[in-house]
Image 1 (cartoon, protein in one colour):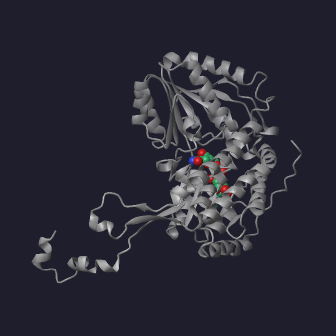
Image 2 (cartoon, helix red, strand yellow):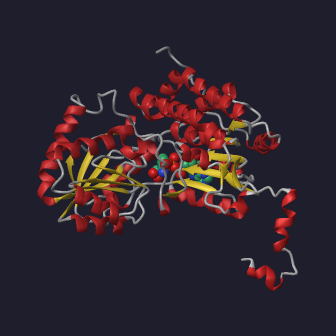
Image 3 (cartoon, helix red, strand yellow):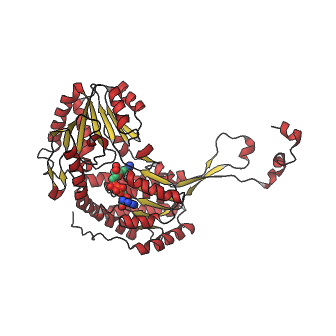
Length: 470
Ligand code: NAD
């Protein structure tokens, strides 16, 4: 890979934000972004922007998160390229008017239909952990829907934010799309503008700020929020399979994954075997340890490193595996902790890091009770066990999505809508859902002039004779 220079992070001047937004809104009103050909051209340009800047994105994700090349390629760059390919292949079909189903003949005469209209000018606010995917994923949907818009990447991944800005400026229509870089002041300046939709990914705490601000102008929001997701391993599960798959769920991006399991409940009978298999899998994944491996990322910055470290320090649990940390490079090893209290901070708070708190349980009923007590609407649920057990868990624990016999596989299926429920989020995207989330379904009828005689029945004076016709 040729060496790539990434410009130092630079926040967008706050006083330039209103004029940028104004320019982009004017472009929306010009109708320019609505034709299929325009949308496809912009999506294809973005595709080539990703191809041409793959090395820069790999370098940026390495600088921001120590992200292994493999992870940047599969979960950032190719992820977005695949979304673009799927959407461009289906867009014409999705954009077509839909006719109203199951209507009587007289109603068919007015051609009742649903027009798929862009919502307008939108704002996408991204999170740091998948800085490409979580920024471009929603934005691809917005372009496909015919919207114009602004992307505000996370400043916590500053190198990637700068590469995204370059891609937008060099490949997309600058009158329709822009990247505004910055932190809280820039985001607040953006939130002070009137949008037709805000798509936010990040913590529930900031999601509340965004939703409150949006409510002032009745702006619709999609919120993709935090996890605190339970995994359950029953005595009927295969301990090796469960250990390998759940370990992968914490290895990817060093556990900085919103849909990664936050804690694992394991039936007592199988706990020793499960822990043993976790040790074996770790050795298989990282024969020379995680620190020496090019396949294990780092915590994004010192603040998050210290936050995760504090969770381990504050926990009353016992470290069974790992525990090594190195502040000089924000390294935290996969750390398995046996926790006995469901109020332990490791269970209650989202670690968003490579921690694996394990809680011993007596049975599936206790798992259900505990999961619902910890967080009634998690983003994900991961259940390992017999068919009967996993379907009972699925029935009794609500979540945004779920993977049976795996950790967050559902989140990697490009045509499955992705989103939370309750306080883990509202709205969804990916596949057709990305188009739908930025589309207004506008119901329209056209009444022909020649129907006037037929319509006479609806005009007063009504009289008994008209009533009898119904
Ligand atoms: P964050 O909420 O700190 O930041 C997200 C965005 O909000 C950033 O662009 C940031 O600049 C902006 N922001 C931060 N503070 C703000 C404020 N006070 N006012 C206005 N804007 C502000 O989230 P994060 O730290 O980037 O991500 C971690 C959280 O996001 C975790 O809880 C994780 O579970 C969640 N997450 C959810 C998903 C999902 O798809 N549901 C995906 C990734 C991350």
